[in-house]
Length: 136
Image 1: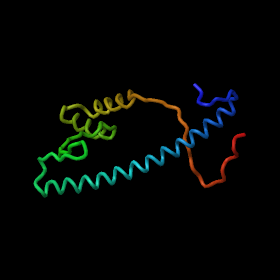
Image 2: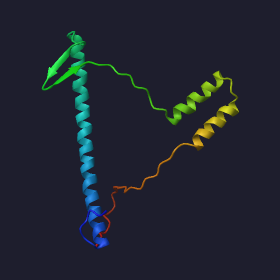
Image 3: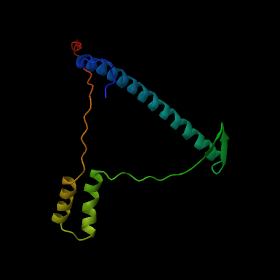
Image 4: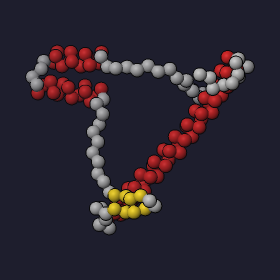
């Protein structure tokens, strides 16, 4: 599928790269804005939660602009990272009376059989050297 109306492959490449650069810069800008917005939202949330508790409103529902806000608690567990497995499986192996060789064998098997995913992508690298010659 081509996003470029030209039939010349070189022109299609030039147009695609220019479009990609523009979109990449736009995404970077949006990500910075989103990060700033999340940080500000977190500060407002922390302040509002503190005030709700201080005012005895922790169990209340607050109606605002077509929505309602309630103070809730949630519990999330950490992901099963490789570092976690390497730390906890030997501890489990000791409790289960497995030999260090059995534990090492299990860790090796898990390491060797992890799922891997390959993707192709364009990577932009900024450097201080002079700009590359434009495509013509």
